[in-house]
Image 1 (tube, rainbow, N blue to C red):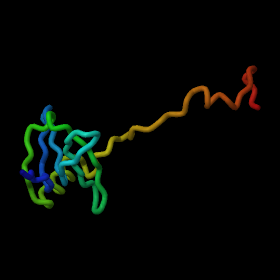
Image 2 (image 1 turned 45 degrees about the vertical axis):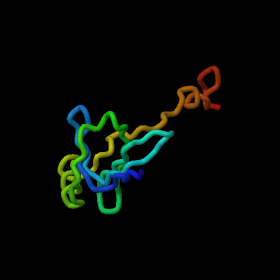
Image 3 (image 1 turned 30 degrees about the vertical axis):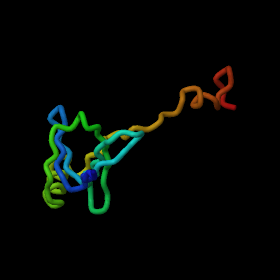
Image 4 (image 1 turned 180 degrees about the horizontal axis):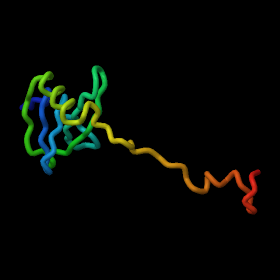
Length: 105
């Protein structure tokens, strides 16, 4: 028995009324099946998101043109967060250049 692996341009509908247009394909991460969605942000550049199957409400196969148009209209061209997740410097590292009296070393 063989099963087909899903891979197509699609509009992925998620619980919470969110839609993600992009190139979707089934992947396995840490022993579990997930859906990878590559959302186009410009020619040749995309943002990747992963979703577990319980979060998926519907998958509507679509053309690349429809998905790109929807992504550009929905996200104002770029769906990345305004402030991407990143590390902030630890407060003790920022003050390590001062001695106990507060004077610069």
